[in-house]
Length: 330
Ligand SMILES: [Zn+2]
Ligand SMILES: [Zn+2]
Image (cartoon, rainbow, N blue to C red; front, side, top):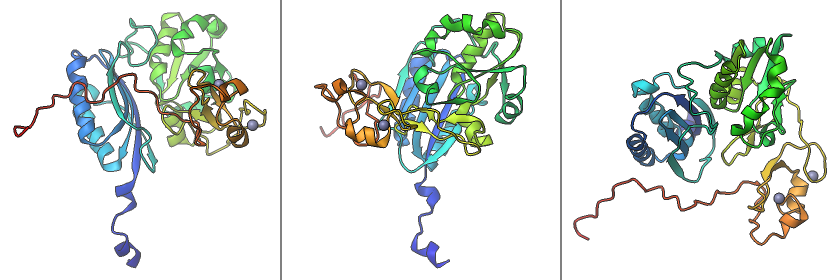
């Protein structure tokens, strides 16, 4: 076709993908693995955040489709990661500014280092199975994300926990004890928290524990997100994404004026950095701040209408760990 000749570069070649993934599996030498992995990612122009620990890998990265596809093949070429599940979304550009590959004690901070999900965890439900089960009488959905996340979006009827960080959830177990005779389905953004949370529930004596495999994101991609009300908070510069293409609904209100709004922003005052919904109008009026005090804070960041701010690097150097050889002619 004439059109194709004028535009030889197909959409596929300029498409970007966002990959969200994790895998719990023992890694004997995380430092060596981290370095190899980091070098590979830099060589393939990928950006994002990857955490490596002796219990596995957890990452969100963006890159050109061709690079992301090569990455998925590369990761799956390790036998320990052969069952890794990638959530793949398309986008128009990188959703991160830099490539970070870091070593941590856990791939998701729970404080429960003794829990090994590859040994025992809640039964995985694929999105289609979850869709079937979620409305049944003896089923309780439990959201294991933090308050700033579930307040902007959650499954209809889900039990939520008022926690600032995932690691605080064990303190809230008392609130769940009344559901011990029910079927519990845990869910979170991409599934990783549920690997530990559902294992913890089993340890606490809950017997019928299930988890939404791949989390809200995979359920949105594969099943259209039915009954997810509001938006799903994500950890890249998109801030929050739509999940539900079936029966969407806004559940959050503007922090400033109280009208229905699902525009998630971070407060422009870095010391506050409140994660909140602020409507378009209030965003501009308050210059991205959540209060009058934050608006005049000396360190307030410039508001560009998105409410997303680059994290300060804290001395992180993406080239640390890379062996740089000085060329002979210098
Ligand atoms: Zn408002
Ligand atoms: Zn603020």
